[in-house]
Structure formats: structure tokens, C-alpha cells
Length: 297
Image (cartoon, rainbow, N blue to C red; front, top):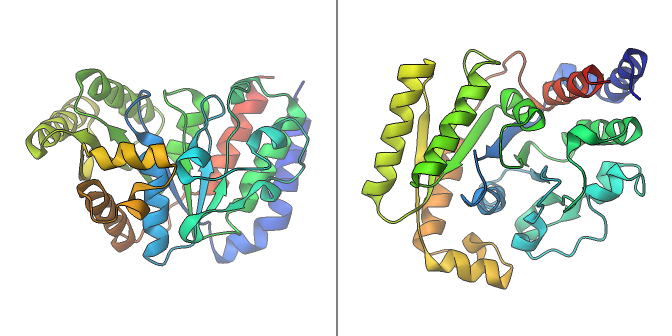
């Protein structure tokens, strides 16, 4: 069982190695890719976004935070020897030993399919995980977190700590409703959520724009938050072809419509340089997760 003393010791050990660096450089840019429900293409967007950001000169670490249905490595065509599961189970002590070299200069931390939810991890596993997360900011200037679907506390911890959160939805009514539920849950924790909307698999720009209009309207009217759109990624058969080939679509089919739109999303993120903000960044995400884990003891 975890207790408050364990929490304080863990926090001290996490920060001891990184505190001087964090004074000079608060943290790597933390970009969270999430979706209110499964099936919206969130992981595919995260993988290809990471690759597109690398092509624009960013040093990117792509972290698969979905412990239940992790498949980031499959989309990228990787065969991991070690995954996050090995860290959680104590078979690998340091998360950085799990980091793989992906395509285009990406650094990738593969998840572990079928293991327990983060909320059920034992104390020793929590300590290894949080220490490893702190170390990721040494490996790149941008850390892209691919969260699991839904709005449980571990997902919220990443979202509220991110410099930007890409909320991925499709035009389907259930997906739009789930995206709104995510925004509502986050708005109860922080006053000014940093949401950027990406509508995926739209059959037309009109269909995608209608989803954007609905979400931005209800977010402003009922939650009092502004949600900005980064664009519409059309349904494109080449995306499915790339998944079957286990190659990112921006790499395999750079000229297809989905690739062009995805690169536009990456370019908009690169041109928007986040300002230093209190309560934002990977260190803050680790601290929020620490509080969650030790509060449940």
C-alpha cells in the first residue's frame, strides 16, 4: 500500500535529478492526443503527428499511455523488445531503457496491451512509472502522449497538464458527444483548458465543419471555453492501406489527402510556440499523477 511518506520520498527522488534542468528549462512541450471514445483514429493521428513534427525539426518522444489496448508500435511498424508493461511489472527498471528508435527520428515508448489500468498499479510500479516519465523530457523537445480512450483520472492528469490537447473526434454523433463529455470533465478541473479540435475520417469538409461548429458552440455556451480547430482530416482509403502495411500514412503515402491535412496540423502546432505557463508541462503531469495514486491509498 502507498502512504504519504512514500509519496514524499517519490516526489523528492523524481525531482532531485531533474530540478536544476527544470529551473533553466521548465519542461519539454507536452502535447496530449485524446478522444472521448475509441474508434476515432486517435492513435493513428498521434503516430503520424509525431512523425510530421519530426520532419519539421522537432525532437519528438511518442509515449503510448494506453495500457489496455496499446497499438502505437503496430502503426509505426515496430517490434518492441520491451514495453511499458515490462516497466510496470519490474522486469525493466528504467523507462528510458524501453525507448525505441522509430521512423523519421521518432523516439517511441510502446505501451503494454492487456495489463491493469493505471489506477490499479501497486506502489513499486507507480514509482518506476513516474520516475521514468520525468526522464522523458531529456530525450526530446516535444513529448506526445497518446492517452487511452475515456475520461478516467489518469487521462485527465495528462490533459490538464498539457501545453496543447488535440481532441480527436469523428463526425459521428456518439463521437461528438464523447468529445464534449471530455471537455466538460476537464473544465471542472481547470479554468482555461487548451483544447484543439481535429475532426478525423470526415466524408466531406462540410460534414467535418458541422462537427466543429457543434462542438465549439456547445463548449462556449455551456462550458464557457474556447475550442480552436486545427482542421479536418478526410476519410482516405490510403490510411487503412498504411495500417495494414504497418507504416505511417504520412510516410507511405505523403501525397494523399489525409497526409496533407495531418501535416497542416503539425505545422500549426510548430508555428504556435507555447508560452511558459504555471501548472503546465510533464513535471506537472507527473505531480498530478503522484497525487492521484497516493490519495487512493
